[in-house]
Image 1 (cartoon, rainbow, N blue to C red):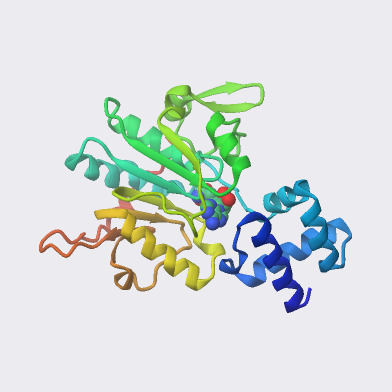
Image 2 (image 1 turned 120 degrees about the vertical axis):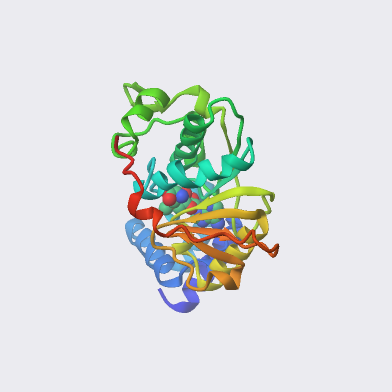
Length: 282
Ligand SMILES: C[S@@+](CC[C@H](N)C(=O)[O-])C[C@H]1O[C@@H](n2cnc3c(N)ncnc32)[C@H](O)[C@@H]1O
């Protein structure tokens, strides 16, 4: 695919779907588009653009193909373990009702993991957990509470698996109590405003697909959407090299705290806690 063809195709996709692929890493996006065309046996980008204009089902297929929505419960268990042992208990000392956003939530496994931890820590409190994604299909599975396969639940602590899931013929389903704890919403992170005043924003394994510019803009948005001292939880490979330039301090690996200007409230680093974090397989 030539540069001109690539630009023509992502322009058409933007026109038809409102998804702006300019904000995603070019090499990766281009490879995926080439792969999609190859599978169709199509070599002519211009005629493929015409097909897209006439065939909404093809547009949906392409959108599905472009979104990478692999997810699982308690993904990277040692970091979810930190939520359980350190971060959420500390937040709950100051307030009984937390406001949480799982951004780019995919099939809901991430948001439900947090809902389970909160129910475990404060069973009588009602927290607001918002979970958003651009992909309608995976939101449908999220809202239905599954079904999830054994790979998706492999890191769920046994106690949680027994308490918060039911095993069915088609896999594991999240119990209704958990489903009612999470609100799922379709939302484009790069475009739409979702609200502010969050204690915790979880955005994991999404930034890796974005250009440096789009990633930086998103980090600034997250900063604005967090409360003072709120925490941003990123994926294991999504390191912010200069957190201070975005108004964050490093709280622990993967966790960034919104710095506050008030004296004495700056987040203290909790780096040593990682060594003592419990594994989540109990
Ligand atoms: C690899 S998954 C990560 C899921 C989950 N956060 C995790 O770490 O397991 C990336 C998710 O980001 C979503 N996504 C990509 N671009 C997005 C955008 N502009 N707005 C909202 N969600 C987006 C995809 O649809 C996909 O579900």
